[in-house]
Image (cartoon, rainbow, N blue to C red; front, side):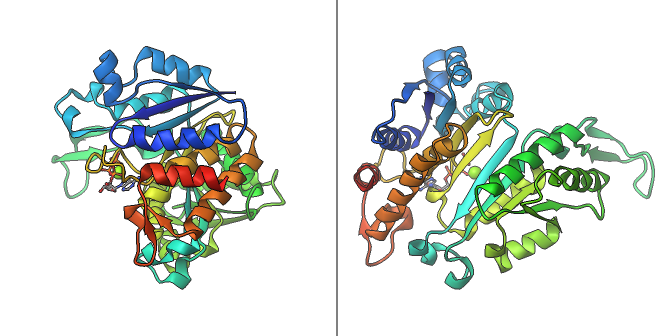
Length: 355
Ligand code: ATP
Ligand code: MG
C-alpha cells in the first residue's frame, strides 16, 4: 500500500515526521513517499501543487497531509498561494466527504470551555459535504435588486443547490461510518425554510431504508447548534451540508478546547482519502519543536481505518495516544499543572513506545 506524505509548511514537517515514525513502527510494509506542497511546493517548483505532487497523490492509496500556509507567501497572487494546494487536491481527487471527529479524552477535560461533566468523554463525528451547497452554486454575484423595498439598489446573491446523487453519496458515508460507531446519525438541515434542505431531508430518509440497523434523526441547524453546546454527548454521527458543516465542525472542535488533538479525513467515492490535522500550519510556533503532533498521528489512525482497511492498527494508535495522555505527557498547548511538558519529538517517541 502506497501512502503519499505531504508535509507542507510551518509545523507541517515536524508533525508529519512524528506520524511517519508511528506508521513505520506498526510493522506493516507501507510504501511511504514524500513530496512538496503549499509554500514548500511553490519554493521548490513554482506552484503550491506541483505536477509531481499531484501525480503522487493520485497514485497513492491515501494521502497524509501536514498543513500549508505561511506569512511569507501572503503577497503572491491567489492562484499561487499555499492554500490553493488543498483546494486543488480536494478537486483533483474528488474528495467530497469531510470527516471531523471531536473527541475529548477524559484527561483533557479541563481544556474545554464547557463543564467537564458536559464534555468529558465526548466522541462525536461530524461529516460535512464538500462539493455542493451555497459555496459553489451558480448564478452568484452582485446585481441590481429586481424588487421589494430595495429595488434598484445593488444586491449580493448566491445559489444554494444539492444534486440528488450528491446527497445520496454523503448519506451513505454517514450511515456506513455510524455502523463502525454507535449506529446513530443526526442529519442536520433547515428543511423548514429552505427547499434545498427539504430535498436533502427527503433523500437522506430514502437512503436510510438501506440502513435500518442505524437510527436516523433529523434536526434543524439552529437546534443542532444549541444541542452541540448544551449536551454534545447525545450525538454520535452528524451529517450535514457544506455551510452548516463548516460552522458546526469548528464549534465542535472548540468543545474539546484543544486544536492540537483533532484529526480529519476527506474521502472520495471509493474511500480513498486525504488525512490531515484540523489545525493549520501554526507559523507562530514553527521550528520550535513544541507543536502537538497528536492530531496528525490520529489522522494517520483515521487513514488506516477508513482508507487502508486496517482498523486494528488504527485502534493500536488510538490506544497508544490514550496511554501517553494517561502517563501525563503534554505538549504546551494542552499542558496543565501536575502534568509533564514535552516537545513534538518526545511526544512522537512516547506514542511509538506506547505501541
Ligand atoms: P488555517 O487558516 O490554516 O486553519 P489558522 O490561522 O486558523 O490556520 P492555526 O495554524 O491552526 O490557525 O493556528 C491557530 C493557533 O493554534 C496558533 O496560535 C497555533 O500556534 C496554535 N496551534 C495550531 N496547531 C497547533 C498544534 N499542533 N500544536 C500547538 N499549537 C497549535
Ligand atoms: Mg483556521
